[in-house]
Every structure is written in C-alpha cells, then in structure tokens.
View (cartoon, rainbow over the protein chains, first blue to last red):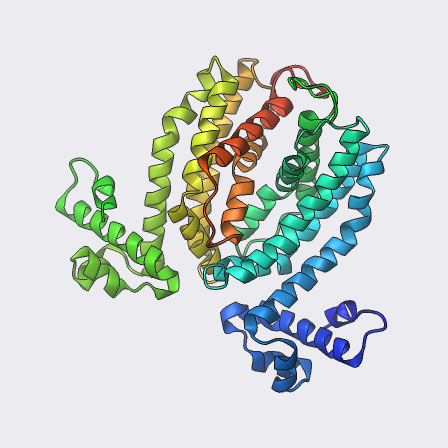
Length: 225
Length: 225
C-alpha cells in the first residue's frame, strides 16, 4: 500500500484521497489475483472502504483497472518528463538520448507494468476500450512527446527526420522491443540485468542516430525540414 | 477446416493425418472461443474424432494449443524461408531486405496469429512452458535465421554487424513493432492497409542499412568481422 502516498495529490480533498486509496488497493489486488480473479469486494476490503464507496468512484471493474494502469503510466511518464522535455534543447544529443533510453527501458520493463500489460492484452477482446486507453496513455502519448522533441532537433539542424512521428515510434520500439517481448513470453525466469537493458538502450540510440542523424549516409534529402 | 490440407504432410500415416485433423480443428476452436473457452470436447467433435483419440495425441489443452500455434508459425516460417535463406548471397541487399521485410510484417500481423499471440500472453503466467514454446518457435528461431544471413553479409563485407544476433533482433522488431503493438491494443478497428504495413517495413530496412551498412557513418570500426 506504499503506492498510496504517491497517488495522493497535494491539496486533495477527502474524496480525492479516498479515490487514491481505492486505486492503490486495486493495484495490489489486480497484481495479486490477475484481472479475472480480482473482485470489487477485495478492493473495498484492502482500501478500508465500503463497496458503495468503491462503486461511487468506479462504476465497474474495467474502469477501476483503467484507473490503476493510467496512474502507473502517469507515474512513469512524470518521472521521465524532465529527460524527454529537454531533448529538443540538447547540446549532446547522443548522451541525452542515451540517458533517456536507459531510463525508459528500465521503467517500462518493471515487473508490475509488465504484468499489467499482459492483463490488458488478455482482456483486449472483451474490453477493447480498456486496451485502447492503455495505448493512448502509454505508447501514443509517449510517441507524441518524443516526436515533438525530434521535430525541434530537426528544426535546429541536429537531426534529419522527415516524419518525426515515425522516427519517435522507431526510437521507442528500438529501445523496448527485445526486453519487452522477452518479458511477455519468458515468465518465471530472472528479469534481465540493468546492464543488459542498458546495452539494448545504447544500441537503439546508435541505430537512431545512424538513421536520423545529420551525418547519416544514404539519406537523399540533406535539408532539415 | 481448409487448413487441414496444409498440415497433412506428404506420405503421412493414418495416425499423422488424424493428428493433423485434430490440430486443424483445434485451431478453429481456439480462435472461436479463446483459450479458456475452448474444450477438448469441441475439438473432438469438430475433428470427427473420439475424445480418446484426441487425448491419445495430446495429453492436455496446453499441449494441443502448443501444437496449434507451432503449426501456424511453422507455416509462416516455411513460406518466408526462401526469402530469408537467400539474403546472405544477395547482390541487392536493400531490395532483398525490403522484400523480406514486407512479407514478414504482413504474415506476422495476420489476424489469426495476432489472436494466438494475445491468448499466449494471456496464459503466460499460468502456462509459462506454452509461452516459452511460442518464443522459441517464433522470435528466437527467426532471430537465429536472420543472424546467420547477417553474419554471411558481414563476412562478404556488405554489412558491418559486430553482433549479428542483436542486429537480427533489431531488424525483426523494427519491422514488426509499430503494427504489432497496435494490433495487440487496438481491437475491433480495421487492420492496417498493406500499404501502411509496407511503409513500416521499408523504413525499418532504411534504418537497418543506415546503422549496419558499410556506408554507415559514425561507426568507428570500419573492418567487417
């Protein structure tokens, strides 16, 4: 329940605090019992709230689950925001991209997020809105933020990305794909070491710079947009 | 049940044909009812086999499901093998990689495979062996095949990949990641057009050549291994 402290905003009302406590309790219940096994009763009990109160905040299990993972994603996004938002003004693109990439791969492959991702994929056909909410809060928002910085760097003549959104998507998945796919399918073994995660991150940045850097070869259009 | 024809090998015995018919029926049942909803009874009925016969071939639902998706993956791998195996001898790397990449993204994002992938991720915690079998039959085998060709091209001085396995993993996920992640989380909308899939494939190849091609800039070691 230590997450409870994080999700309580400053100056929050009593109702906000109760909502945050319910979300924190729900996170524990979903991670412990899986989506199908989790019940609103378990959540109410762990949150020290009545079932009526839980339902006052969340009309059903999908919307409670959505609150759980958007909170988790928001926490990750907030932690990495300074790294991401400063990329566009960077004077050391490779170093700053590497710092972002290393941070990104470690946060997104954290065991709790991997389990939530698996639950969402599992329920995607029954609850397409839940899966779409994850995609919007996670990859889509992340790609937009990165694309904005890539656009700035291209305008400054430091990158050459004619399609900043596609460049952002490729950067994100270059960083994440190998460890994230292994995390999805290889269960019950030790998670990869930080060192191994950083190796993927560094190679992703090398590829990105090779393809989108101004020194890249084989790119016909030498003019930044 | 038209898949039945494909999975029956040439010169197969009566028992092989029965096994193939059971796997083909199971494929339909799993895709129709999902993993949890599928029963051995449904499979036996659709295959026109007794339940005893089904259990003679497959001791339980996980092993029957494993046979279904390894057959599906084997079909995809067999179809793309000529494209992959000729890469090492290519005299037009960019063109041949693009042909492979376009074929690869279209096969792997086929709706039936996407649904199987979702089911496997859903059951990965309860059946880690099933998920590991998918990972071995799919990505791991694919990466090994690609790495072998990348090694050949590096030895011929046409690519510069000091770690062919990592280069293979990056190529694979550059080709697949955007459409595959959208397919996992964005359910019930039209699948992406072939044209859009090809665009991701082409950009993946451009990045790969920029980073691992011999004309790549910013790579300190100019000697092919």
